[in-house]
Image 1 (cartoon, rainbow, N blue to C red):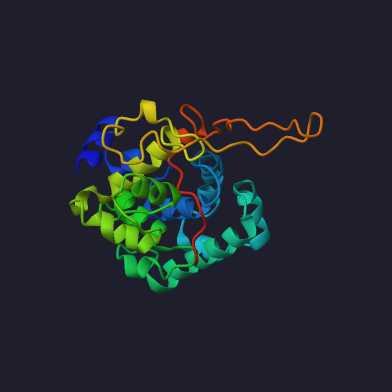
Image 2: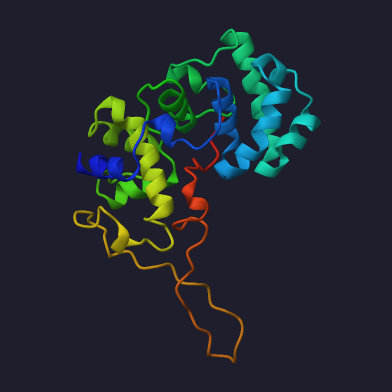
Length: 249
């Protein structure tokens, strides 16, 4: 697929190379990916060294004191729900999988805090197995590129995977995430800089999102202007391949 070929030139490497969460083991990647919901990879990478040192194995995490764990992960947001999921995750790995992270997606999604998105990250990044993680960036870009007409993550995964060889699924998803944060930014896409603009059916058609009306100035003189590109823009926090968005446990 031409989209994959071009993005591979811009963002080279395997799924593991493209993932910016720091980890040494599948267990550490699983914990880090659960923590990455609604925060940045940079923030997760600031938290995980102390977390991994305190809870090096699933059994240690299963026995964690809730308040202590919440304190360690507080800065990642949604820390109470994440702490519950992490303790449940540790217990599930200890009790059902002999403290090993399973490779099968159907097994992964039975673990607290793990949905298809996280499961596919683990498969593709930790185990070099086929897995397309569909987050909000992947959903948006696949629709803009005309690769799918659906907004359902499971349908998107199914339809896009038919266009690629299985070995390419993981890397393609992570490249879409990077591209969606660096170039095809939701609030202000940089179509002129995009290497896909000669065949993307949405190129140069998406108008920037306008600012909300400002309350300053005399009545009737409120102005709207283009929204500034936030940290998702080129060179900002968007350089992190964050897999944003919580998943059901």
